[in-house]
Length: 148
Image (spheres, rainbow, N blue to C red):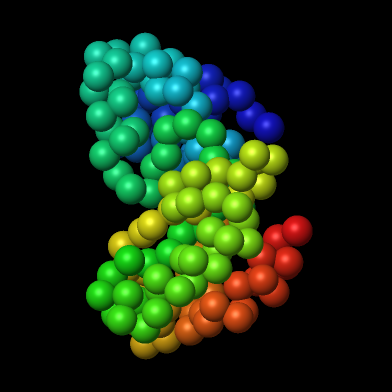
């Protein structure tokens, strides 16, 4: 695993490098460590408040630990109407956590997301950005088993 300091330094002289660096750090760690945001402020010569502001503004970027498997469920109207609430209930029951939480073993995190562009087959969940379309509550245990 590359150290976040090395990753940040690769992008320090590029236009828009801060966001590119955050994406690269998140790709490596599955999240952005808080200390990496502080280091980014130093590397890019900006106040820590701006570094944290950029890291927390975009819903795709996450500061702080997350699970190995990031399960996101679309909360747009088409998914909601198609039964997203029932899928959420099964996810929470199967994993023993609520939306926005991470399992104690650090394996799974549940998050909401906006539309993922799969409205033709709702509801939709993504696991580490891989979409599972037209997901039914009964399918959730089998989908989770693929991650275990």
